[in-house]
Length: 229
Ligand SMILES: C[C@@H](N)C(=O)N[C@H](C)C(=O)O
Ligand SMILES: [Zn+2]
Image (cartoon, rainbow, N blue to C red; front, side, top):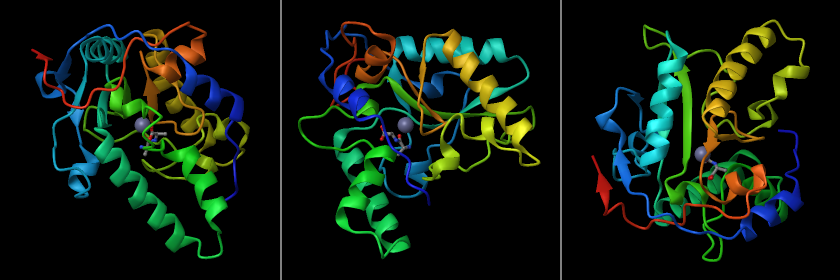
């Protein structure tokens, strides 16, 4: 796997972006007609299959899906408590260490920083706000569109614009599918992630920093207690 570099300035900026929590409740996505595929629950990493997001995020996703017409959104992951973020971080760190026995601690840390938000106490993982989603598109038969990599493929090919500069046989189709997802999500105000084509943010610090807003509207939520229907 070739190393790709995260812009360290952006990382510092988003992590320091102020938050003015708007108090929006969480909502269970099973009340909508998305295709739910809670991957981390199926893998035994999470102990809950329920997909929670902030209310506005859910309605935005609904509009994205409505506007897509013949495609539906498949949702792999949404809100994560910090404890799950920590489990996920450890799981992937061990996996990367096993696959790359030649990598030292520094290299492992660098690669991990790109693909999984650190669960450190002084950072707020984007998914822990209810404002981040990991998604893809499926056709009428429930078949996933070709996005060039699997979910959580931690390599350069996962970068949102990677295939824009490739001349492979499938590149044009992959670019078109990724563009469709990105433009549909952008139209609803989501921020796409540079390194993971499946990850989108709304309302959290990444979103605010990327769009130059002076504050984020979603803080960390430890339990989705105040849910809405
Ligand atoms: C682990 C992956 N699906 C993901 O969501 N990564 C981002 C960077 C995150 O952990 O917030
Ligand atoms: Zn994500």
